[in-house]
Image (cartoon, rainbow, N blue to C red; front, side, top):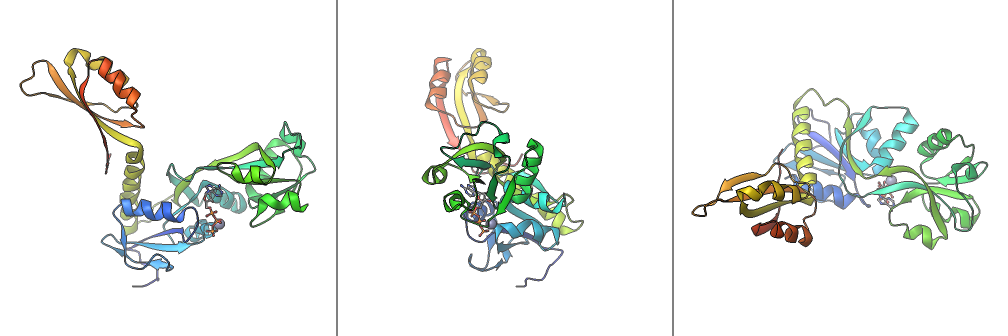
Length: 298
Ligand code: ATP
Ligand code: ZN
């Protein structure tokens, strides 16, 4: 077991603890990856597939990839975009969006402060942990303001008097409300993403990277997908197909001993509700079954 780089082993950097830690570990486990060391250690050796894990602070992940210490990483798009803004670099790119840990980088102002357009921010002090993204957004809006860089507890800056407004990550908005702030503008929409160098390494790691990205893509697609199975008359199929929500091309087979009726199965990429089933039944479908999917390799 070694932490020295090995061209035959793929190395993935994930957050050690925090909002993305469980999301990342869970995703990799669903991809069939197993690791030998306990999760609280910095380095985990992959069993089975030659894929190892490095547990670090999320902010360090784009840099570790740029330096070639890691081949892939899982971060919020906000972290990747801030790194790109500060390093004027496209060395690390978004390879896959994970449809998880959604949030937005937003400008929030004190509840009583009128602010209808970004021009209201001119001359204000804006507290943020995202100075690169904030500076780029302000320049885009043609607004000159000063940026107060804070590494945490940004939301209390206006109350402490160290800033007038803030630019911070928001998901439910509850933290803003608790601090008498309201969301005014969105700077960036974010979710967890897989990042890596634009070019895959030209050795075994490249093959492992492709394999893993295909598995991750399958896990993400399967999460919300359902397999719908039903029976119907052949003549009703066109109508039934149209009622299936976000369905891929269905498979149709004969039903033994039932003249004219066929069995249909289709993968629906999204929720299938009771209402959908009742609509399908009214259109002539019977024997309706909705099943969760476990694995999908497209
Ligand atoms: P680290 O110790 O690794 O630096 P951190 O404190 O910077 O951790 P977390 O608070 O764990 O990071 O957030 C990790 C990521 O989770 C964020 O970069 C963002 O992409 C996502 N996220 C989702 N919702 C929120 C939210 N409401 N506030 C902050 N981050 C959120
Ligand atoms: Zn961080």
